[in-house]
Image 1: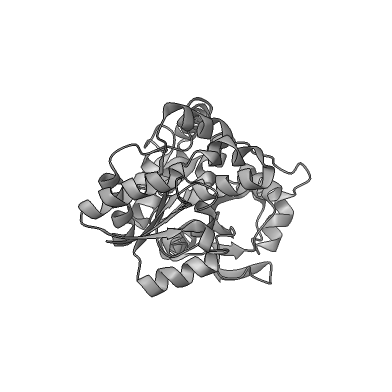
Image 2: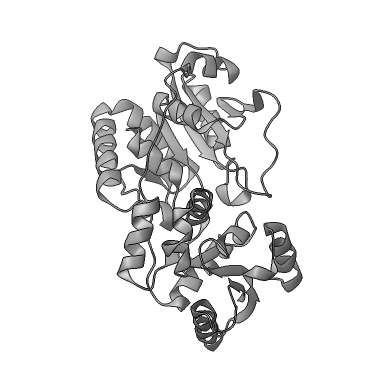
Length: 336
């Protein structure tokens, strides 16, 4: 595999020594490792050009802020190695902290060399907080989505994702439309989130995409998004590949059922019939959606378990196996 390895390579620094050691391991495993200094680049667009020119299939970043911020939003999957100053210094700067949290959401894995580093990252970024807008009006939202039915009779499934191939936003559309024609009270609303340069522009109209039972809205402020999640029947994830889905964890925190595509990233958080429901294909999604509607006891149980999971466990999991295993995880993303 051709791998872009982005690190801070100033001579005689710990990161430079670590980067060289990791590069040797990767090349010994048969990978082509293109090692570049993160300080030589100023923006993700420059990295995008490099990825294209070098025909890189995946990327690795050493230093969550300096390297990680440059790897966001590209077509290739990437992993992160914590550098030291990212967790000891940059984490205390508000804007950098926010950027690093976003990097971790997109990364396929993260590596911490010590338990202390792992715990520092855990304290900083695993806490899931939701802030629903108290003034949000669900009926107004439904009207903007061109859903002209009483909220009391509806079951609205929210699919929250960036409009990118890896998120597969149209995966369930055909099956859901057929279900809607059988049961007009079920709707799926696609709510796009900002996901980097590959995302399509936000729709200018309130409802851009419309199919039987399916609507696509524009991007929303986070507080409104959380309020919509809290008002809906269930939150859906149909991604081909995930690192950690913030939407899944936020739904659990808001006590909303989750139906997620059965992929490793989702299955690491969603235990089938315990903290949510996992589906293998659109037909199984419909079966599980029908079951959830008809079984209030199941809904209550997975909501309670999901809430407890977010409270008790890591919402972001660190892979700590060998680098070769981590790279196989990136290769799996490419195959998907």
